[in-house]
Image 1 (spheres, rainbow, N blue to C red):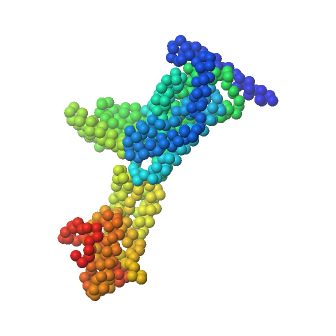
Image 2 (cartoon, rainbow, N blue to C red; image 1 turned 45 degrees about the vertical axis):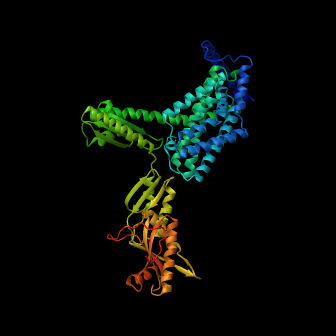
Length: 555
């Protein structure tokens, strides 16, 4: 009983202090005319309207799904106009405003109810985005998607200002719908990006977009709370039910939202300080003017080393620039880092100006294509030396050419490609196997029916990886001597040519010379008297022919 009385007394003291502080601030702001008169029944009516607009309903869930669907499609095709269309119908303003008013009133029950509505809308948005990404043939990470994979200082500023504008419009009851659109801009696209990241298996995209969503949600909610309290639109502190249960709920909700906001502020602040430090060290060590540092970008994730990219316009080239700058930065920051300095030599003012413009264009393109495949994980999973590796950002594929290994067959390389796909994080990994001079496909004949089996499927996979479009085929059956054997050889080659044609691969079909040494070698290689040879590497003196997809054999 004494403990309960002590808690109640403490809460009563807190309530009285907050009431006095709020009333004092309110009295000062009333003189400015910044807020409307909410005396009498106007304040309770406004609060009731905000709370009703933030309730869960069928129309709210439907509009969340439609908005998320439009946002997902707009992100996939990198259309800003379509993404804006999704923002226009997003209903997220209602529960966000209710949550902000709950924080302003220290109303744990209202905060809990509004948080549930936001969670339901978010879940619907993510699920719809996952489904549409799976159904869509487009899986590329577009600039619209990449732009929403990590929170920045500008995102935080936009969310805060949007929240304040929305709160003022709500208090004055003017243009609330239009301001709701501005608020939704910071929430629905990140949710759609979360769904995209889950669908393609890219944990970095998913985590970054979700952190952006939580950060913006926190900034908007707290902006609403601040304006609602200062304007007197929130419930008076004296009338707030400060029961321990709802106080705990309110504190928990505050921590859930405040934590990502604090992490984002910490990261943004650390990156901004590193930019200032790096610029100063560049100017001191390389004797540069401030204008000579054309581009400077710092990325320092919460877990990991900082990545610093700089483009310098200088009259001369310094071979030791990276070593000198990296040494000083490591000593100042107290951590290892990744430093990339690009030096552009310009001897006069005109050349320097051109270099700065060109560099800005190049960096803009690089920023659009900053989606990076997990090359380290791919190499580790590969387990083989690599002759070549290159990235196609447009199609989000990684092409890998391993060295030729003894005992490695096409089936082994294909199995390795399937294994590596698990660590691709949404990137498709293509293994390009070493190319032999030809492939021999055995043909099985049962009850007059001809089948090629797994060997032809492997051949089609390898031909696609090699990028071949037109091939020479040669069929054989027995000795290819009799009319029946030649007919069977043509049937074999037509079977293979038809399969290749379905994959968009043209072919020029013939049959192997009768009773030839080549025929005996092919039979031994195929371990069958029925088969087809696919010529992969043509002789240098053979002309390139553009055949029809299913040319007639015997040409």
